Length: 349
Image 1 (tube, one colour):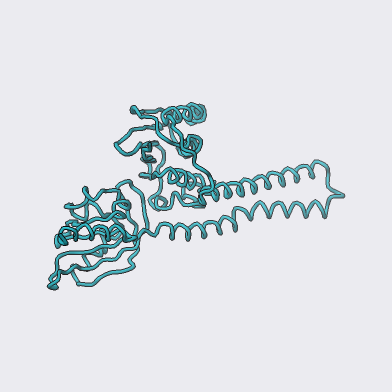
Image 2: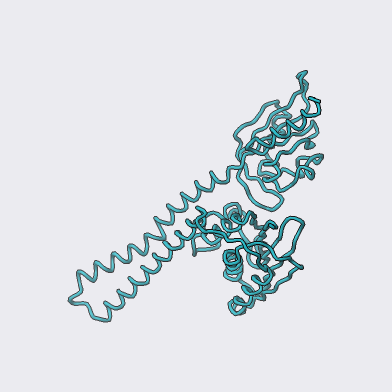
């Protein structure tokens, strides 16, 4: 009786550990896969167990300094190795990896253990802090300097200054103030999203209808850049969503596809379903996204190398809204070949 309970008890322990944990035999074939490993990789335990680890676990260390190879060649465990993990949804996740050899009760080597800790929140906060400091130091500083400088000139020279010149200065001051206000409001809006202060009201909604309405609104804007927008929808049942918030998600993604396009092309928005989720993709034929930008694209205040406008808060809000729905958002892109943003929403009763 005790023996029958042992595997179940072991699985309960593995699933209770707050990090992804994977074990492999001597040939690097996966033998166990806990709940957090499923969440991190996007593969279920059923899909992963029995597969070579190279088919399931993909990180930036795999080709150059695989931690498992270190254990195999030198018999040395590794801890605290930071890497970038790429899961089946093409999400780029910063992780901390630890590995060790596994021995049986007789001290004989039988396989490997790999522990993977998701440190994306930790790294994201660090980058957001640095990016925000940059934004304050540069983007907010410029309009403030303009406002202060012009006010000082008006105060010192108002008597000999013509009405036309004063009006010009007032217009510049007003524009700089509006620019500063827009930056502050953009930051406050993201803050509400990031701290979950925007309430998600789930009701049955028609995703294809929402998307087609957004496309209709953007047709004129796209036509100016000689872009065609079309949709392809499978027969999607009504799902529980916050229609208003998801409208913001797809408007943002479509706005970006149009804004960054530099040649005529097509934008395709498609919807399909699986047993557990609804998948929406926004695919464009634009310039693509730099490999260096991809891991940080959904960070607040991240400004991509291809853009000199905005503060990256739109995509940060997209991620926050999708996650509030219990979903995921990821991007796959190649420079000069376009981008595909994929939103996955769970089906809820």
